[in-house]
Length: 94
Image 1 (tube, rainbow, N blue to C red):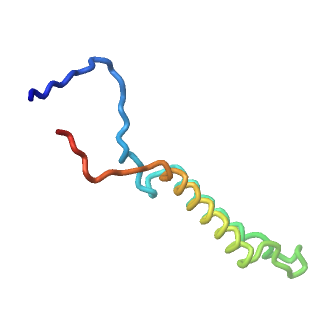
Image 2 (image 1 turned 90 degrees about the horizontal axis):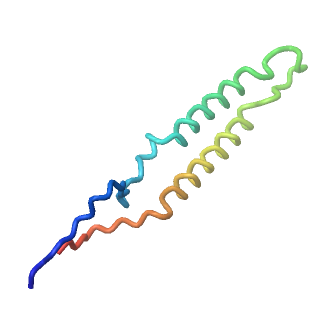
Image 3 (image 1 turned 180 degrees about the vertical axis):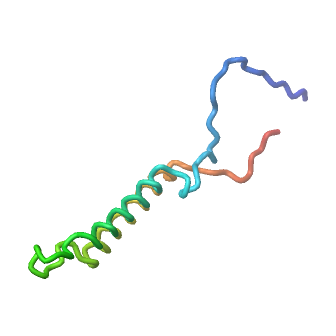
C-alpha cells in the first residue's frame, strides 16, 4: 500500500498544541510581580507618619490579603491559559 502525502503551499501559521509559555515568561507574571512589589511598598510607606494619629492606614495584614488576592488571580489566569491545552505524548505519524 503506497503512502501518499500532499503538500499545501499556502503560507499559514500552524500553532503547536504545546505552545504554552512557561509561567515566568508571561505578561501576567510580570504584572503580578509589579503589583506585589507595589503593594509591599505601599504598605511600608502609607500610614507611618503622625498625620494618621498613630494608625497604620494600610497595614501588613491588609497587604498580605491583597497579595493573596493577586496570587489567586494569577493562578486563575494560568489555569484559563492552560484549560484548552491537551498535550498528547503519542503522536502516530504513520
